[in-house]
Structures are given as structure tokens and as C-alpha cells.
Image 1 (cartoon, rainbow, N blue to C red):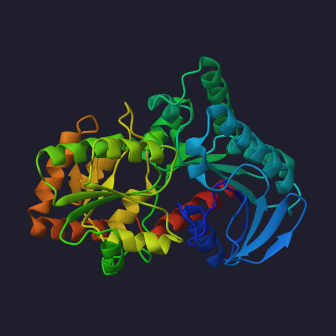
Image 2 (cartoon, one colour):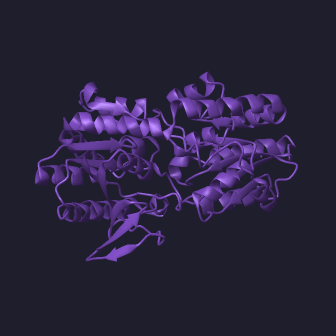
Image 3 (tube, rainbow, N blue to C red):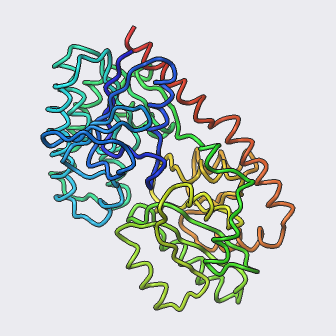
Length: 410
């Protein structure tokens, strides 16, 4: 197959963020398929670049990548933007991606990965231009997710995104959802069940591993002699990290200075979170800044005892967070405040503890429980790695995507 793959947030292992589209593209190429990726402002200069008009051509480990001068490549930038500025950037990317896409050789199939939702417009236009099938990957439900966390309240904006959502779903020949909750949300918009496949996020079994030495970062962060839980990922409104600060405050009142929370990453809420932690004198919270590569992130994770997957409490759970799957690969117990399929997966497989999303006392209690029981931590860690290998191996999930593309094309 000749695949035209459009993903605004295409990330390589040398950058920060999820590498799903990179890994899937590599798998497809290893199977003899041709992949051309269109993305936004790829900042990694490690790869050869061929300059063009508003587009640079990269050879990213054999993947032909067309990086266009519209939108932005790092999703964390959006957490500090207003809604209008973000939408303007999204539409610019969708429009220029369409123009650039029309200049490539005719593909056999088009694969567009959302977010943002606007990339669905690119898929529809390129489908019409080339007369080939279009597969739409839904990584988050818009506008539902934005409404649920209170980030979107304007009735006109909601109507506009609802209209765009339905248009993208109707225009796609097949849809890939990253969680059962996302599939349910897609089908609620009138899409037939058989038109939607679930392919969750995957665990990076090579990059994250129980045998990685994290001692350097443990010293750097001053974690010696402390029981440490880490959150690593974006620090935006949807991540709800005030929940972690509340848990830290509870532990402080209980005089559990031996338990430390590390918050690693960047995002629009980071400065506010740091200010709140300083105001409350939360010396048991350590903020860790971005590192040069995801490989370094894996070492920071290795330096800690358990991992936290935290999101803002919402009525519905549709997330498929990279951080949870990488925590499983690292062989760490997982403390998660997200219910339904994510929390159930962790609890039912003995990989950690599911905490109430509304009550940070639950997180504080879970931290105390695990800090007191190294044997329980070890068992949960082994279960985490086993689950990552058996259910969330990236190679297995990439093969499922390949099957979806082949069946859609046929």
C-alpha cells in the first residue's frame, strides 16, 4: 500500500511526546508499504532536510516526512493558548496539509490522526481529490472532551465542532478509536459499530524497561531515602494536577515527609501549579523540567517507585494516555484516578490502585499503602510489565492498524 499519513503532532523518539504515528509508520514500512507523513513544523534537526515552499522534506529514519509551516508540532504549546488561537492554528494546518497533500503521488489510502479534529477536513478533501479511501484515527473526542473538562462552553463553538465532528465521521471510510469510551462516543453520533475499530495506545517495551538505571536522576532530584511517585506528561487544564497537589498537602498534614511526588513535564498550567505548591509550602512536591529526549524521560521514571496517571474528573472517561502504557512497560505500579476501562484494567490485572477522581485522599492513602509494602510494589511491577507485553505490545497493535488499512482498501 502507498499510505498518505497526516498527523499534526508527529513525534520522533528524540522529541517529547507520544511516538505512536512514528512507530506505526515504521512498522508499515517494515512490511513493505510506502508511507508519506505530513506534519507541522518538525523541530528535530537530526534528519536531512530538503527545503521547499512552506514545506521541508525530512528523511526520518526512512520515513518521508513533509513538515509544513502551519500549526505547531508540540501539543504542549496549545495548553497555554486561548481557544480562538488554537482553532486558527488548527485550520491553518488543515488547509496547508490539504494543499501539500495534493502535490504528492497518488496514494492507495489516506490515514489522518486526530487531534485536532480539523485534520478530518484534510482527510475528506484528499479523499475526494485522489478518489481513495480515508481512515480517521480518533485520539480524543471533540467537542465532548473539551466540554467535560469545562474548557469549552460557547454554544456557537460547540455547534461548530459538532458539525465538523459529524462531517469527519461521515466522510471517513473507517474510524480507529483509541479506547472503548471513544468508540462509544463516535457511535453515539450515529456511526455504525462495524465502522469503528479500537486500537489503544501501546507500551514502548524497548525504551521503558524495569532494568533501566535511574540512579543519576534520583540523585539529581534529591530523592535518596524517599518513596517517590512520578507523574510525567503534559501539565494542562485536562490533566487536573491540582489533585496531586491536594494529595501532597494531605501527606504533609500527616507528616509523611518520606513520600515525595515528582511532576515532570511542561504545559500551560505548570507555572500556576508551581506557585500553588510554593504558597502551600509543599516541600514534598518536586517539579522536573523537560529533558532532551524520551530516553532521558525513561530514566527519570526509573528513578521513582511508582507512576501516577492523573486527569481532571469528568462524567465520561475516554482517555488513552501514553503515560499509563509507558508506566506499564517500565514495570512500575500505577496509581490512577481515571475510572472505567483504564482503572478497571489496572485493578483487574493487579498492576496498581484505582483512586477516586474526586477525592485526593484516596491517592494519599494509596501512596502510604505502597510505601509500606515493597513486596506488593514488586508484584504489581511484575504484573505491569506482563500486561504491557501481552496486551499493549506496539508491534501487535501496529499489525492491527495494518489489517484495518488493508481491509478498508479492499
